[in-house]
Image 1 (cartoon, rainbow, N blue to C red):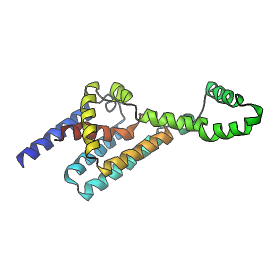
Image 2: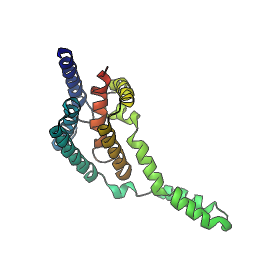
Image 3: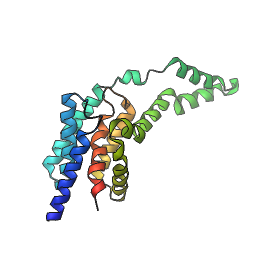
Image 4: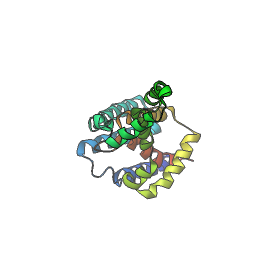
Length: 200
């Protein structure tokens, strides 16, 4: 019993350290800081005590973060393609011979259109660990993250997996490069580092 309390205290100290030293967290507006803190801590306490109240608090805070993420992202600009990108796309269409022009339009517009390209780019950007641990978290936390993520894969939690997948899908659609960055990923990365890295 005493050992489990000590582990809980250590995890809480680590999660507080991760949050307060994050180069991503420090410059955030006060409202963002509050909801990043509440979302992350409510998720932390839910995993340790698993009460319905903590789950509800997390979901409320999470949906507020979703609102902040979407409202701080210029979605129209995300899908505004440069002249160079349009040129490359049009050039690909011109490579098809006249007899295959119709097929080319189908393939390019449905399977490899600029929008699909941007969605694919958004998806991989939202999973870019180099960016997270170069600009958003202390680089020294990368090793605890790898350890924690490996333990998470061995014993996945459906709730965190589901909400993390929802976050990635939203970032894929809206783009992860909003005014405040991919806020939706902050609680999950922090939990992986601070909770799962200390799991036995």
